[in-house]
Amino acid sequence: MNQPLGHHYIGGARSGAGDTLLHSLDAMTGEPLPGVFHQATAAEVDAAARAAEAAYPAFRALSAERRAEFLDAIATELDALGEAFIATVCRETALPPARIQGERARTSGQLRLFAGVLRRGDFHGARIDRALPQRQPLPRPDLRQCQLGIGPVAVFGASNFPLAFSTAGGDTAAALAAGCPVVFKAHSGHMATSEWVADAILRAATQTGMPAGVFNLIFGSGVGEGLVRHPAIQAVGFTGSLKGGRALCDLAAARKQPIPVFAEMSSINPVILLPAALAARGEQLAGELAASVTLGCGQFCTNPGLVIGIRSAAFSTFVERFAARMADQAAQTMLNAGTLASYAHGLARLHAHPGIRHLAGQSQQGNQARPQLFQADARLLLEGDELLQEEVFGPATVLVEVADLAQLQQALASLQGQLTATLIAEPEDLAVAAQLVPLLERNAGRLLLNGYPTGVEVCDAMVHGGPYPATSDARGTSVGSLAIARFLRPVCYQNYPDALLPDALKNANPLGIARLVDGVTTREALG
Image (cartoon, rainbow, N blue to C red; front, side):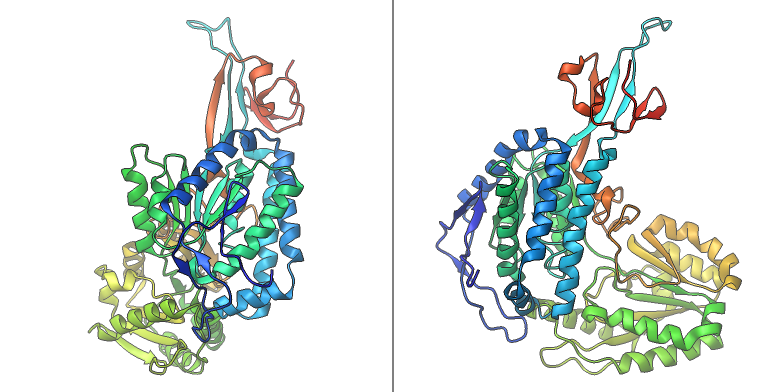
């Protein structure tokens, strides 16, 4: 693809009816890139949603193996994209080639992960309670339950991960694995990238015989409301700001038929430095933490935005070393001008707060983000000051020194929901850590010990979620195999014959699916 066509993908065909034209920009220079994109019209949004709705019965009815083949084919197509594709992503995002190549591997890897989930079959959640006709005082009917795809899903691309949380990213992969066609709203920051990936998805769909409309893509601003309100859409996947996520949640809740929104929105990811760890390796921690805060220009949703320690000479020494490390960090280009402006606004608010002082970092100027370090009075955290709870998206963090363990517990109890919470500890700290873990369990989806939250493994055990405002629904995750559960719903069949049951619930169990039968896990057929 030498130049993007800028047309939408609707029902397996291209559409570009709108007169309003959009441009993708070079993230380094702000100059328009080659090609134009069409703003989706209301009719095209409607057509995309209806195409997904039309594809849903046939796609959901496909065997898990057929859907797995589709996901594997998408991964293969992504891996085959050449240097021109990598160059396009780099120009749109200012991210280096090595980062894009790694993110592509993660994206194809999570597609293959979900293909594996489909093949092993545990996503079915099959439960069977056989009839007890002789039971007194009343007989029990034959009851069988399994999980089915919820319906067409609207997915919104994220700005900071143009591949892994975008067109063929985790939400799309999980929805397709669940048997749910997707309508994808491309992010304005990387529209050309989205077209490259959409082409790959559609090639895979053709190769594997998927129904037209299994994947649809639309470009444009202001189209999200119509998409979320559309009666064909049954769930929403979103990664972005708290403001954007809340708007989608409110729209979905106000529908005649409310639908779930699985939104990842905002997190400051606290890191708690315990005394023995600071005394043993304070200088090392200063370097490691500075690297984590500034990794990828701080544009990770798990970026450590709050660092807490108990007052001590070791903590004071750490603050000096950490400030020196942060002052040495180089400026970096952010994803786009809007992200940089938002970062500058967040820094200005911290500078203006009377209870917060600036410790390190050069003045913000030019078109690059400069790392910054602040320290806040502990009372702000203890009293629930809203500014300390807000994410500043970029290479900045805030230190807080608490007086003692009791004040640390109070501070952690005051925090809102988080994606991650980290304890840095030595063995001598574990007794103290044990008192903190219950507080962290209440507030975060992933608890780390002696690690840094930047970097999310794609695997079965991962949780990338947490209580509000980290996400809109703390019961799910947007990374890892459990992400498929967001787009499934349980269906119970009472007294149904084998001929009318899904394969996962048939007596014959032709696929050897693991099932809970009368309280016992088995893969055996039923007599």
